[in-house]
Amino acid sequence: MVIRFIAAVLILFGILSSWTSTAAYAQSDNYIYLIYIKGLSVSDIEGKKLPNLKSLADSSTSYSNVSKPQVFPESIYTLFGDENKTYSLPKMLSKNGIDCMFIDGSGEIQKKYCDNNSLDLISGTNDKEVLNQYFSLPPEKDYSFVTIYLDDVNASETSEFRRWSLVDNEMGLLLNYLINSKKIDQTSIFITGDSDKPPLLMFRYNLNFKANYYYCDLLDLGPTICELYGINPPSNMPGNTLYEFFNNSNDPMSIKRIVDLQKQCLLAEEKISLLQKNNNSINADKNKILEEKNNFDQKLLEKENQINVLRIKLKLFKLASLVAFIILLFGYIIEYRILRKKFLMFP
Image: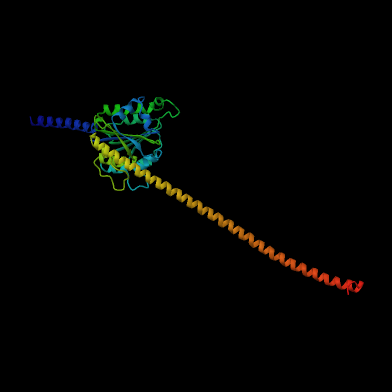
């Protein structure tokens, strides 16, 4: 009887352990997807021709003005931290027990970089194929922080739908995956691009985060992602936490205050940029003046050399003139004496 009881307890314990393990894989505490789309601009998601991107935009916190990023992959290196930076966002997340994955549809991200920054890598030249590789991972390969770069864009197409249809379909595949794997409720999605005027969408499922703000810097994503995981951003990490993403409130006064502050921030950055531009212009003028001064000094030196040559020539001419005068005088004296004696022409 006792043996049966122990056996039943062990079987029950095994079932519970198996269920708990499966549940742990299926439902992590927090998932974050950072999605870069090549060449994506704010205007590209304003129409209704891209259903998946449009539906995300309609339920997202967004920004009218976003700092211009560097081109890919430098934009990723700047955000994550490259070899010259004293911080690494993926490394810091990894140290806090957060598994990080990079899905690169361009094949440009170096594996060495990922290895040095605690990033697992799925790389290829076809966006759909690399996404399918990610979707096919076993449950135990459960990454909490996933960065995706999509570049299957038909840039030559004039129609917005045809140009972005592949990317929009891939976004639909990702959303279906999150829904089917029951991760969507715990997922935050950030969408941006590397165009001159990129969007920034911050999406959470089934929460009223629809709001539009004025300005942010793409480097603000680093501290924001840290805060979402409950990690204090390091002091040397650039950017500021986007706290508006944490507050489930659309209070008009608070939004107006944030917008006003963001406008002030943008104006300050524009002034700094203008000062830097003026400083660069002053430095350029200074360099031009120095160059002109050097040219003038060079010409002056050449003129001095010419003057010295002329002085030498003048001295030689004077000497030659003196010699010629002496010769003429000597010749005149000799000739005078000969003519006087021979012809008595002179008294």
